[in-house]
Image (cartoon, rainbow, N blue to C red; front, side, top):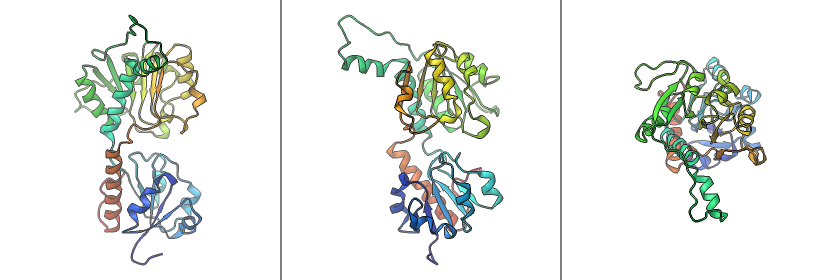
Length: 310
């Protein structure tokens, strides 16, 4: 290990482009190769995609670890209690992709509510005939319920208002400073919503919070949109509700297991699906890279992290 440059391990293969970004300033090695795994005890910094759970046994071997730097905004794969108990700092990408995820949520709502994907398929298959019109539903006046009013939720609310939707929300903590009304609870929000968007941070305490009961409350005309984490939705209950007509529709960018098997959704009606691309814009990824570099540089310099995990 270099005596002048800290050793950084990069955890997942899809983060391989970061090796070239980091190597001019630091000693960097891939954890998915034997050469990287052999240096576990010497690595001061671990770069990871925050949605992936870090192996506790591996972490215990990292005696020199002082910073877990999440390239992503999310950090639910990091055991924060474990890190704090060992004095290990954790950083993430802040709200680097919040605006893009909010855009994607609006896109999913439009795609489902205006039947854009269905229309595309009908045209391509020759089903568009003279005089035939597919009636869809307007955005104006629709009641939007947002689960989790953080950076994504607030960006979404502003966009929805511009589209003349009526906005409400629910989260475990009240935010009196917000102008949008907070529902009495999650089920109450579902009952009062035409469209419900899940934009909450995922924790073990809220796993499966979008349950069969919430699907029932949203109802046969309701649309569920998830741009947060797949684990927040009881996926089996969601699929059953869609098949049985107890839920009107779903538009999903995240799934319980990723990549989700195509066969799981082959016969599920009234769904629009995207492969976890809500925050994956060129601009957002560039911001995430900048945040990663800034957090690592601050750590190495002994300065406060730019975007620490609270």
